[in-house]
Amino acid sequence: MSNQVVAGSDLTPQMFARLPGYYNYLRDLRVNQDEYVSAGAIAREFGFNEVQVRKDLAAVSTTPGTPRKGFLVNDLLTSIGQQLGYNNDDEAVLIGVGKLGSALLAYRGFGKHGVHIVAAFDTDPTITGTQVANKTIRPLDDLPALCQRMSLRIGIIAVPSASAQNVCTLLVDNGIRAIWNFAPVHLRVPDGVLVQNENLPAQLARLSRLLANR
Image (cartoon, rainbow, N blue to C red; front, top):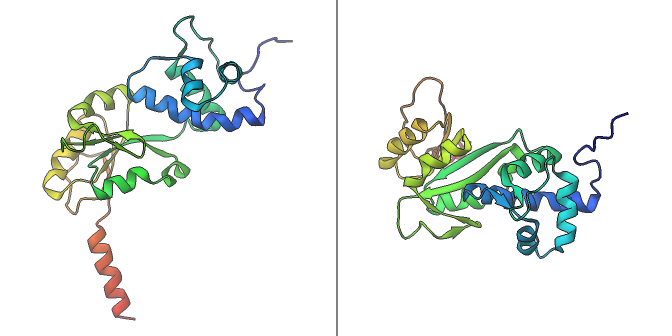
């Protein structure tokens, strides 16, 4: 008989309820390029008892922490994601954090459909560095490194029409293979790249015509 302990086999309902918060916190750490995290740092973030956090991580993690360093962020994300069923989800980046982009960033419903916006970018220096929906808005120059490091596949474009094609090309050049486009413009993409267009003014006008014809 094997004596191997299966990660998650000792999880109580109370432990399980804390995992989504840990998971979101770890995702932010990964975006910020933090390699390790300690139980103490997690405890301070959530106001939990450090001993309890250590028990939570020991129950869920498949690899032990390293003394004076803590746990590898990527390993913990994988372990917690397996417990929560998140590992088949897609991670997306958002470009353009005006009113529409801010609303998309704040919307919590995407996660129910397996998509999480992990980072947001803008070219406006008055917007970059600010916080929207608990995410720090990054300059567009940071996009290539993040896409490549995290192997991201989905990009959301919420920029003016004049900038949309350049943003689209930048996304495709850095590995994005599916684009959700809110700019009212046709995007040119290579074969194999998916584009879903959302022309909100046109859709509203169509709805108005349908109503008038009833």
